[in-house]
Length: 112
Image 1 (spheres, rainbow, N blue to C red):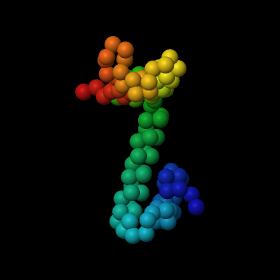
Image 2: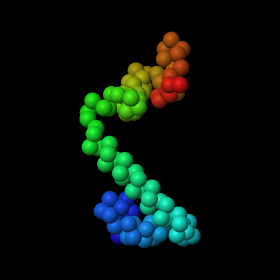
Image 3: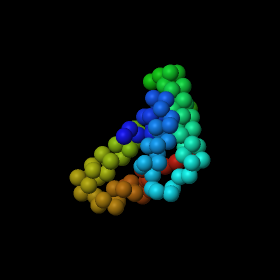
Image 4: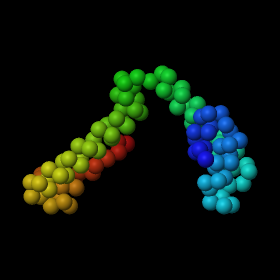
């Protein structure tokens, strides 16, 4: 049996409803909920199609996508930094939260 997302993308909505019912915990969905979730999958798929047609690499550095790009780029660096601290002999707790000058650091600081 195929997944509901794939089935919706192929236009096989009735099969997607059946697939959702098959993988769900018994009694979790009633008939109305399944239809609403399939509609949600269609909506998300349409948005993804629209965005994939108009996107470019430069869009990764504009608007909301800039923040996503920063987070994805920063995460591996922070892991490397933590490893470097440990190799230098600093404790893991210190490498996670503190710079040597006492400044507290968090891996993904949100901007307000």
